[in-house]
Length: 424
Ligand code: EPU
Image 1 (tube, rainbow, N blue to C red):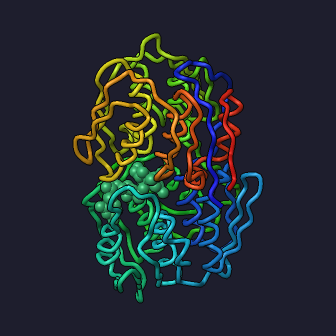
Image 2: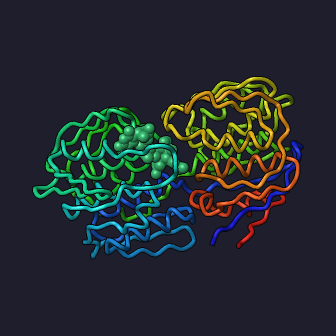
Image 3: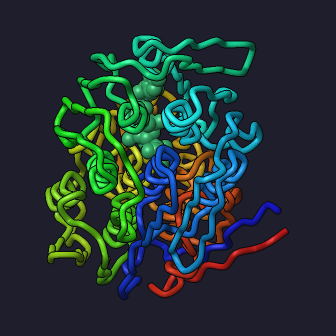
């Protein structure tokens, strides 16, 4: 199945209007699902987004012997028989987040075997931090063509790790593993993303002794953990929320984004305000009205709380509509401006100076095109470009957008966009 989206563009008119409700965060749900494996019993999560990546993670958990049920955004994971140690190859290769399972399975079964984890094509995505880190914690890691085997015959040792690069999933993986280590683990130069804090909250509710999540240094003492009695609610998806805010700035008349956490979106909302967009922030919602005249701006992606790399592609579409010269500096991934050539074919003036930098001159009107998104976020960016363009576009590779966005066409349609899923 290779679905596409057929979008009738608005030719730059600010017409979309309404309320959109945000789901639970993909990148918060996936580590929680992995963390369930370090516990015996049934973990219950609520507000879990019904997206392809969650289904893939369920498949990996089931391949390890866990039982999962997933309905109405409620996920139950039972781990009593989760004693397998080999990650299902085909799934793990599709999902970079499969690496989150290394810590959990290693802690649980003292061994884990996985292929080089795949995921979005964002340039090179190494796993050296995982290999080096587990070696420092006394584990044996062997690499055989495309397969990694991690073993901890005497359990995971305590110790101190300094991450050479700030990494979200490395921080999360070692937090999960450290809960079952032989002694205290201190992690330095950690990611400070809200999803890291949410994972710590979950582990603490399960009995773990963790301090420092949300700061660069996290300390984890070995603890007895069991699934929290109360179901744990996945935090709201700041990237989905941000994508709709950008849509609002691009072609919105008035869009209210509900069930989001505005504190997690400050880098975006402050940037939008600086561009002249009207942003109204309430406790759990943000309302957006378009700028009278959209001003250009320079952005630089950064680890949280900086501007998120996952919003870089959608935001660049907005910059094509700003009046003057803007620039984008992508500091996290080296292949994350590849989508820009398609925007150029739509009529945008985007000059990719090097793999990390693009100069955008606007405003340019965009022409409809048939294009395939290369990854989740660039796929969403193409939907935004199609929405502002003149004419009918077909955006292929819907399955990549479905990895991260639940019922995207339904939500866009409810705001007034003419969009339909085409199944071929
Ligand atoms: N890195 C290394 N070595 C490693 C691991 C990472 O050098 O062993 C480098 C990466 O190459 C990159 C930098 O560290 O240059 C940061 O990458 P990070 O490890 O933080 O990325 P990730 O944990 O694989 C998560 C999200 C991504 C998001 C990034 C950055 C999840 C499941 N994924 O990935 O989300 O872009 O953090 O915020 O949490 C998406 O949702 O579409 C997505 C790609």
